[in-house]
Image (tube, rainbow, N blue to C red):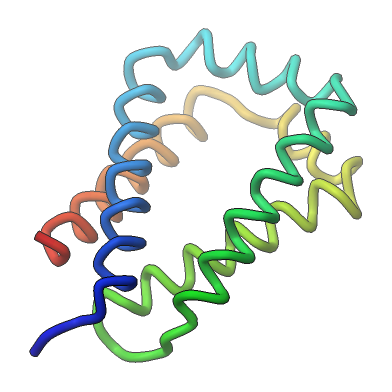
Length: 127
């Protein structure tokens, strides 16, 4: 079964991105917790990052909105989550700020391991 080049490209993009995020979170846990909390206090950065997530999420959803029961479903869900994250930072910055303030060591480890598993899953299915 062959998959479209777009599915493979976006799957690899998310796979590598999640793998890099996982390693960065595990290597720099304490520093990243501090950065996330200070990020929440910067409204301009919150809006800008929301814009970046909005654009990337919208592009990913427009090019890959495939609801099938294989690895492409993970890509579609990640695309929608990216879009929702961008919209959330634009329309509900106070909620995003409250979430950022709650970031702790346990959250970082759980997030890193989740990113690692999903990233490896996508990479193993797109190469």
